[in-house]
Structures are given as structure tokens and as C-alpha cells.
Length: 512
Image (cartoon, rainbow, N blue to C red; front, side, top):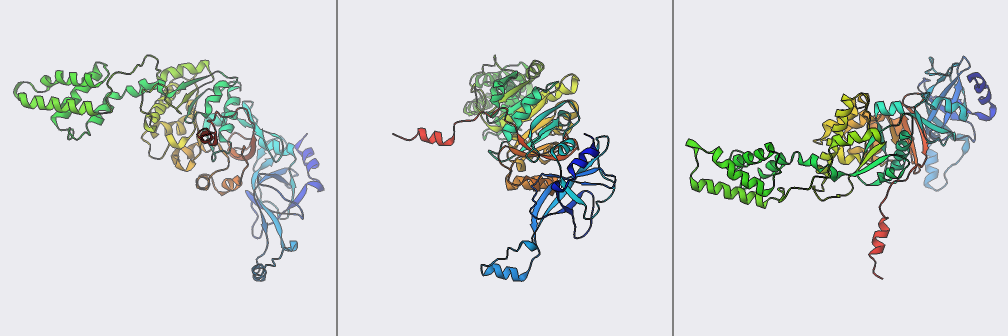
């Protein structure tokens, strides 16, 4: 059906909902619509009016509200319990934002002139709304249904690869399920996307159970990455010991010589190895005219032995690293698989400190390997995806360089950053601003909604409202009009892996 035929079909008395009305001026980007008696439009609804050339200009409702003049006597009536509900002075109004004008050749472009006052406004048919939503690209995937039209919502993968993605929402709103839908379908596209998923809660283990080729790897399998810096880590730790008393002491100089010598010979710095190497290095450090007295040398060695043996940072034996992987080996797995899920939710081997800083170091090393591979190999592409982004990408993180690089330059190098943020307000603002050209926002906490409003403006934040679980407002460069906002009820392709409910834990502790 041509655009003019579609307008003729849609511009009927039954679909006439109101008129453009403003108490002041009439523009293009935003219009105020007063609805006729009995008419209501919800947030996200699509309406259109007819331009002078007979073509439709489509708008989207961002703020529906009741309006009535304020009278002092009505307030007095409220105080005595007799509030006026006279419908004659009530108006249902909508603020609408521009989507675009449909042209005869099925393009969408901005109108050139301000909207004429009192223009008739009609509700869009599902077909007309679909024409201004669906991307034209053939590299696209389905997200779900648009509740206002009942039609499917498609999104262009080119935009999600080029600009990255933010998925945000409070706990239990559906953000993990929504991301799983997008990931699974993106891996089933032609060509399929590849991903590295950093899973902090264990919810994404379900990806390994889908009809995909996905490898699940525990984070401790990358212990060799952590231990590649173990020599400097141990030296830094021992230098803060009270008995060492700073980096200018003879004890520190001997410790540094011993540990650096082990590093050069690629020997693991156990307690015994450091002490033995200290004995070997002492004569070399103080020989000739600077030779130590026997009592001083004995005191230095005894002090070092005590410090090393008292430290929890120095292992008593080398870890078994035969079954560990390097980040570069993960890159080698990706061409033959849809993705790799690195599970940070529990320690499997007991090799590493189970703390967030150690996990962040491993995650950042993996991201760096993906960046290096993608930057140097034009035939390599990989999404870097992390849930619980506030754990890894907090403001001021010492690992933020690689993550900012992925957020700002990853898209053009084939390794975009996708983040899932339950607490968006805690994530590095540089990263979120760079990634929010594509944002999927489920219902959010107030503090996170204020962050969204600061980053994206009042129109988008105002459309969030109280969304039911599983529904989101998606603002994306991957729709027909770049930066358009579409209401989506996500399909459920896979459900996240979840621990037993909290109630079950306590039920099992109840004595019978």
C-alpha cells in the first residue's frame, strides 16, 4: 500500500483523537495535543497529522496528563470533602515528540515547517507505525512486540555493533532475560555475532544450554594471568610491612633483588624460594668495600625470613597451573564458537583470592586481549558483554582505561562494549554516555532514573513510568529513525540461571 493510500485509510473519523493545541507557540519537534471527549492515549502511542502536501507526520506520545484550570474555590471544596469533578473543565492532553514525516518513496524525514494550529490528529494504524519503526537493514533481529501496535519490533545489528549497548533496570524487571533474547538471536543472525560474556552472578550459564556453541569457563582458569604479575604484587605487599620500614632500607633492597631474580629466571616466588634467593643475592649486593658485618648480614636475613613467613600474600607452594588458560587462548576459541561465558560467581580451584579486585584484574586482562586481537585482525569481531557493570566499571577504577577504550573505540574496531547495569548511577559516566546511543531501559530505581534523565533528557526518562516486568523503553540508532524510542515487550527466548529462592534457604534450616 502506498503512503497516500495508507493516509486515506487511516485518516478517518473513527481514528480522529484530537487536535494540536498550544497556549503559546507551535513548533516542529514537540507538539501538544488536546484529546476529544472520552479519548485517551498511553505513553509510547503513535499519532499522525497530515502535512499540507497530504503526507503523514508521525509523533509519539511522551507525556499524557490531565489538565484543568486551578481555582481557589475548588481547593476550598476539597478541604470540606466536596471536591468538584466537573468533566466540563477537565482536559486530557498529550505532549508528543517528533518521529518523522513519511514520504512518497517510503523514506522518513523531518518536516520543514511548523505544525499548523488545530491540526487534526489521528492514531496510527499498526502498519503506519511499523513503517517508521522497522530498520531497512537485512542484518536485524527481533526483540519482541510493541504493546501499542501489537506488531513485532526489529532492531538493526549494525548499530549495536558500531555504538555499543546499555541495558539497565532494577532487580527483577527483566533486564537479564531481555539481554539473553538479544544475545541468542544475534548469534542466530547471518552472519552471527560472537561474544565474550563476563558473568558475575551465574545467570548467564543458561547460554551454554541453548542451541548455540557456547563454552562456559570459570574465572580461576585464568589464574596464570594473575600470577604473571605475582612477583611485583608480592614485593609491593612486603614493602608495607612494619619491619621493612620503607623502600630505602637494606631489607627492602635485598627483597627486591631476590624477587626480581626469581622473576628473571621465571621461578614462582614461594616463601622458600624468596628466602633462598635472598641468601644468594646478599653477597652480590654488599661486596668489596661495602661488605656488611657478619652480625648485620645475619640480622637482615633473619628479618626478611620473619617478614616472608608471616605474610599471607606469599604462597608456601606454587599453584598447579597446568589446566589454566591465557586470555589469548579465549580469542582463539571464538571463531569456532558463538561465545565464551566466563563465570565469576564462584571460585572453582581455590587458587586466587576471592575478591572483587582480583576478579576485575582478570576481566580487564580478557577485555585487553579481545581489544588487541580485534585491533590487529580485520577478520575478527567480538562483543564484550558484562552484567553487574557497577562492580567492574565504577567511577575511578584503576582498570578503567581498557573499558573506556572499548566504549569509545570498540565499535569501529569490531569489539563493542555491551553492559548490563542494575545500578547505572554507580557506573563510570564516560562509559555510559558513550554507550547510551543504544539503551534498553526497564523500570529503574529513582537514583538511576535521574542519571538517565541527566544523560538522555526528560523525554526519555519520562517515558519509563512504571513499566511492567519484561517491558522496556528502547532508544536506539538501530530503528528506522536513529535515536527513536520504541516500547518493547521482550520475547522470552531463555530464562537466566538462578539460585534457589531465599525462602527455600531458610525453609531448609527450619527444624522439624
